[in-house]
Image (cartoon, rainbow, N blue to C red; front, side, top):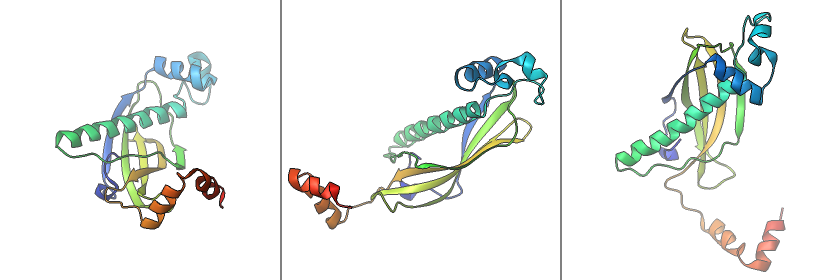
Length: 185
């Protein structure tokens, strides 16, 4: 989130937008990243149990994650437009769950949403919090096609590093002491 950790509300839903998957796009993505016949060859796929080409799950994921990043940038611009300083998003320590629930076919319009389901201060990185997010994608029929539980970092606005950590950080900059401190378990 491009909001400060303290400003993020649990259970807030962020619409990320939709995307129409075309046959050409499905084949182009799969040819490059997931070249299985049911993604790349309409004739062979027509005779498979899928009944035609379907998008790679990674294609569905990539579009959704791109929409999520675009939404982060839009939120940053929105906050700046209101004269507010946006928060700082960090990296993701991982994905806790991911499911592909139904195939995405040419012509499907898939709508993505992100919901913050929980948050807590980080135990390992001072000044940062962890956000627990649920990403969902549904097609034009309301069928769930993809969902994932993601974790991401968000910076705390009002964090002041404890004196002990500030001293330790300063000591790591002294050449000989820095080497000793970095080697300590």
